[in-house]
Image 1 (cartoon, one colour):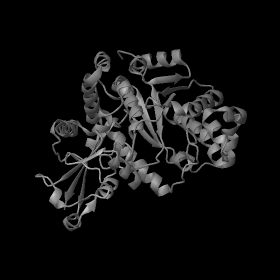
Image 2 (cartoon, rainbow, N blue to C red):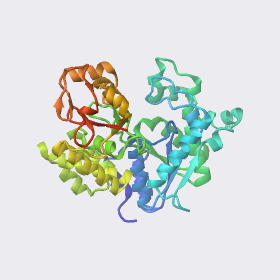
Image 3 (tube, rainbow, N blue to C red):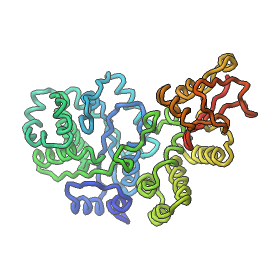
Image 4 (tube, helix red, strand yellow):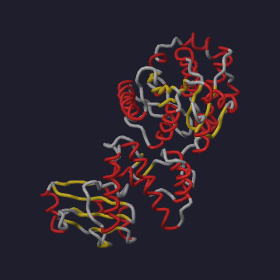
Length: 410
């Protein structure tokens, strides 16, 4: 192995906390390490938030280490209380299994799961058939309730009331690490910094129960400058599934991030050399847009492939250059008869998800933030028909500088 992957992750901005920094660095520098990252199957697609951990897995695998992607078929049935003020909705086993299958498909685009290179496991295989009394005797004896209640993930829930149902989550995640250690020789757990308490639980369980070394490392969470998790838009999450978030919308999300976040995201979410990351991150004023275009293109290329990244970039440039149309712009189609009869702008905006509610659409129109085919519209009851379509047979609704949607007839 050439450069130690620990130094790569550190330089690129991934590492937030470690349980044993010097030992982890030494281990990653001298041998192939089996590590794991858990993914609770709460939806049928990974999100932009997951993408950071996927990138870290890719760096680790490139450096010769062996990833285990652990699908949370079992833990998803409980729900992690970390960062949540309310209890997670309880999902059916069928939904969780379907979501886990979709995660497996998506992760296979980024990680080589061929023989000996990486493993996909599902904690439903061992958690769902546990005998509760045996579990308490075998695992529960190693956990101090006082210490657990002091953990950040539980503190936030104490005010509203933490159920015993969720209190078990840390024990289950720790059991996962112990099980993967026994079955696969896994010695390192990685995860977002919100998982720190759970990761320490597993590290200490292996060390106490097996008298063996085990390590944990957490990554920075992607947040805006206000500390809000990145990867959310007015429409909701930014998904890696192109059917849920189109490559164009995905590209636009990264193209429009805050200036102060550009260098950080280039380091974490692309494979560009760090000299280039620093050069682009140092650009100022209007030039920072060049760095954002590189960022959006590189991330879209990793997630959706080069062809889709080129299409998204060209669509964005066409739109910004001359208000032009492109088939890659998000589009809603209506039956021609319905459009001939006329549809009001507020309805068009809400259906196109340019506004979450009718009152928000009304406010945007009244404040002069909406144009249709490059003409500002301020009448809230204005209706549009096919007679208003441009030469390309479309209405292009623009919200502010960054929100675009095309209306077409079937």
